[in-house]
Amino acid sequence: MPSNVFGYCRIYLMSLYKYDVLILGTGAAGLTLALQLDPKLKIAILAKDSLNEGSTLYAQGGIAAVLDSKDSIESHIEDTLNVGAGLCSEEVVRFSVENGRNAIEQLIDSGVEFSRTNDSDSKSPLHLTREGGHSHRRVVHAADATGRAIETTLLEQLLARKNIDAFAKHIAIDLIIDKQSRDSTHKKTSHKVSKKVVIGAYVLDRNSDEVHSFQTKKVVLATGGGSKVYLYTSNPDISTGDGIAMAWRAGCRVANMEFNQFHPTCLYHRQAKSFLVTEALRGEGAKLLLPNGKPFMHNFDSREELAPRDIVARAIDHEMKRLGATHLNLDISSKRSDFIQSHFPTIHQKLLNFGIDMTKESIPIVPAAHYTCGGVMTDMDGRTDIDGLYAVGEVAHTGLHGANRMASNSLLECLVFAASAATHINSNSINGSISDNTTSVDIPPWDASRVTDSDEEVVVSHNWDELRRFMWDFVGIVRTTKRLERAARRVELLQNEIADYYGNFRINNNLLELRNLTQVAELIIKSALQRRESRGLHYTLDYPEKLATAENSISDPNSYIK
Image (cartoon, rainbow, N blue to C red; front, side, top):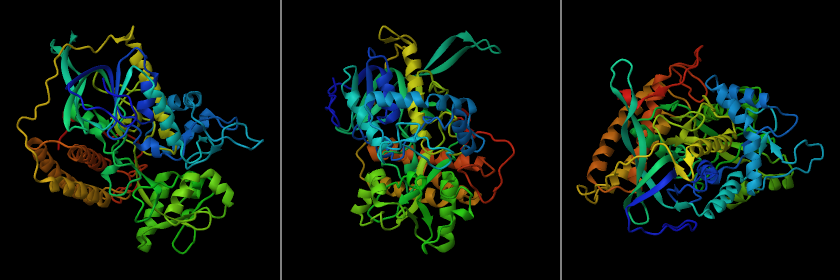
């Protein structure tokens, strides 16, 4: 049995593990789902790095939910639909918003300590802040480290569960799919209809460099997004689109991959790798400034700093290119020093480490890739096109975000859809055993007999750099058809090189992530070329207008033409 100790897993002698449910990812979505599954089920949860590493840990802002009597469900829905630029599913938005309060209450019951208010006039005991696109204060938070509060609390609970085995430093290679025949027949051909069923996954143990087989009845992708495909990103290194790429290779449809959200304010500093400066600063009055100290957002939107992220990011990008500036500035120094330090303690201390005192001076910022709005297509139970395979969180396309994600709706999505997926899985559990999707198929062992150790690791590192640079240059905040076509040609060459490398040499973490990122890059580029309009996060100079009808851009691997 694997160790349940934080951040550590033993090296195993066996190569085949059997579980009822396999969860890939230990962020808010994966942890929430694991904790809400039937405790009689045998569960494995895998993390690519340490068990707490991931985007959730670094989430600063908070969770959007209607908690104040001055606010309303209808207002939150309307705001989300407006920001989503016509591509949100109203049914999904309503489902998410209506379940927001319950999600927050469950976190409070779990021990998450959210910031409280000292305002006697407030209708909510929780301190609520306001972010871009929201018409009310509705973002509940734990100072400026909301994700850390959620991650550490839920992870502590998970490690105490005897039915859950946690594997650190394990990266899934590919899903294992079985084709089964339904009892029903096709109406036109009278032939039995085959269906794809997930029965497990091949997993690289980074502790021992061995490949293990996990046989299971349900697999949940909670692997996050793919913003590491860009040169500049606010995301941690593990955000390499693994779940999207694996699901695509297995036969799942993906949607709206062209909608990549660039956070307007990432710290610009040569020693700061990917430090986000939360949107909550702008919610509390911070102003965006040109190098000469003048504000500029009033030239782009009447909501100024509280416009949706796509508008703010494009405005910053425009001014940087117009002026030839390396960065712009964000300033909240007009607020009292004690207010800044109490509301943003993490950011304040981090900036001090870089020699910046945000209580007295502006913060240098640039936009950075932040969130993947598209993903693996699911229903409201998290189910994908493959039986037994679920996707929750940023890896999924539920229809909540549309063409642009509204601030702090992402953690909301993680919590709400993890709960609904857990409920659906539990509905198939009888006395601690999952009744459907069982299979007697033997999983073949991983075959590494025809590969060798590589003496060309430089190929992987070079391709990593090339991919992220041309995605930033050609598939960034502002696009053109010519740039996208250039990127398409380059990604095809990279895929050929990676396929050759993958087939001849022993795998490692860097190769697997590059393989997945390159697949994600292709999906982004093809989806962007398919959309001949500017909508939400996709802005192209060749088609600057928005079409009258909003349609999702759906890619199907079963009919995909390179």
